[in-house]
Image (cartoon, rainbow, N blue to C red):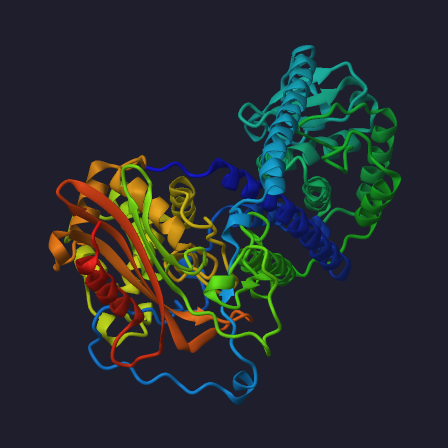
Length: 636
């Protein structure tokens, strides 16, 4: 199986990281706005942790190709039909008056100047991988250092029974399921250890009033009952993975703030003002004495779980809420906040198909394509003439190349024009499908037709198998194959095949199953490139399974044998593209490409022609008949 292009994956990682920064900014803004409108939300852990999760979700969404099941628009099919239709195709519509005023110009892509992945995106992706791994190692090192410090601190203390400390006077032994350790360090009481939780109490706490000791201990036990350590662990994991995103740290700090406020609220619920005053006094006294090591801990005197020091505004806000608790508005306010975060994440997810691949795989802009005056005048350096004075370019190319030596035996007409491969791309899709196992043999898998495929050709609205797919050139079956392969895999194969301009870009509003099929609006190929690709197929130079070669060759065999030549080939039909990128429904291009064998000699061929629209026959079929007739007359 062909490997996925690592550079493309790294470029997508870089884009996803940038997208997570934008998502973090939006999530942070929404979260702060919700907190200002509803101050009680400051005590809600879910707001801040879900904010981090939303940022991570956007990052993952940008890593993945747009999901077929989540697209809004149905599959868009371009008229591209070679097989005999079930009913005559309606006559091509008349050109609009606005189009008649200007002479149509055929847009030709300069394929030699285009690359599927720009150099800056490739280099930036590689540099980002190195930088990210260094940052991740540093984040893990800091976490490990903090854990060692905390473990050493706990090991230096004296284990206590609950009955040995006045702070536990109101609790029975069964109500204190934690190990209690007393340390002779000027630090805050703290809860640490996700899998082996321990409560660390400083020795100076014995100098506090008994009520204050009991309130402080109750605060730490409340952390344990609320499973705040698990919330902190999840936040710390996300902050480590997204170390480059400052908004993750801000959200994590607010989570710690909310945890402390939540415990204050639960401990003081229903208590008289005198006890509230004693609690606030204990907080201030503790902060004057404490030293708090960094790490994943929950401490009575810490109102910011992400920093070592407690800032004055945060302390003032905490004491203010202790004295005058914010009025909670129940599940309604929390639901509004979480819905806002979900909306931000979904908005970023909805935008990612339009943004994710623009830097990695540039879309060919019609306005920048080179326009050709005529086949004889075509050159990569030709400057496009104004549409009003240009004459239509007519495509007519014949190439026959010796498969073994690569010598061009016949090269007639305009063979450097870069256009859509249309259904000839099915040759590549067939090789991918049989190599990967998505396609198994001539008749498997058989897929029934579904209305959701929205096929524009009534003759295709039936179930089919690989043999019928290639024989009738059924577009919806191609899209199901590319969907099962996955867009990243298809792009990897195209890179390995060196197929055409190798550009299968994601397009806003178009599902990736369509964007990487023969209907791709960005994939272009010349007749010369067709023969180069076909030589690799005939000579079996691609890293594919033998079955992929054998079955594809068998299914492409043509019944006719002109002048004794065994022919294997595929047709393709598509409307000519005008200079503005629109389809010229009055003119169509027809492909017929493949290889032919006689007396052990193998030739690859590419025939490209242009025809006026015809309701009775397709351009691809006409091109095939023209080539077979010419082959019968040639002496090769």
